[in-house]
Amino acid sequence: MNKPMAQIICIAAPLAETGKTVAAVNLSAAFAVFEKKTLVVDCCPENNCLFGTLIEPPVDPPGLADLLAGEGTDMPAGLVPTRLEHLEILPAGSGLTRAVNGAKDPQEAGMRLCRAILSQAREFDFAVIDTPTAFSTLTEAALCASDELLIPLRVDPAGAEYIEEGLLYIRRLLEKIARLRREGRTRIRFAGILINCCDDRVEAEALLGPGFFEKIRKICLQLCIPEDPRLHEAFWFGKPAVCHDIKSPGACAFLDLASLWTGADETSKAEKEEDLQP
Image (cartoon, one colour):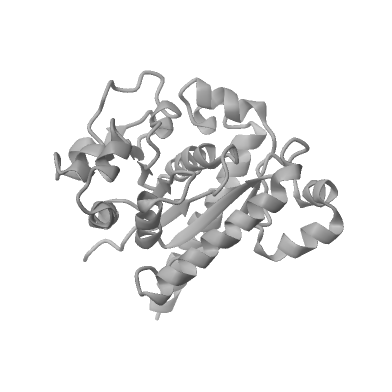
């Protein structure tokens, strides 16, 4: 029997410093803790997913840049194992921006990424894609390959003044996704906005004001990621939070976030098994 396709989750944020890469690393690690075979695809030229999961990352590993430049066709050869048994990374590699911009057809380079992700989807339970901040060919390809979109949004005293600008960019991103759906290029579903750096929705409402928060309440996940220094500390030590301090508030929040998918998956399996009972 063929293994079902992985659930592919695209993490995108139109503004910088929203916690996008931290979310990609820690959500993926949480899936791995639940013993779900997980792939992280790093589409950001900075290779931050690699540095956020390995204390001593390999120097100049093959990765997405080689794949897009046509210098490599075997995606598994570019995968990097992590300290977690069930977690692997496809790094951005070196020269990712050059590989995309230098392609004769940038859209074809993006679609090569899309095909590569889908070709490996049966080898994993989950794939998490970390996209560049700016909307680009790579972002578009990631959206076309994915099942769900998760958008982190930083809500704290320092970032509250940029919320309106952030929501404007999110609206534009969702409009582009609507266009891709009309063109039949994606079937991606909007999972919701993940409020970051905020203990709960009550605090988010206090920071944004009841009237403003009411406008976005329905598209925000119930779960929030708290402002936890251990999250950032873990990242700079080359560890996901679950490897640094699994009992920290940040690690617990990402485990709860992962359970939104793994719990639904287990429920679905249980229902299927129940249906087979005589």
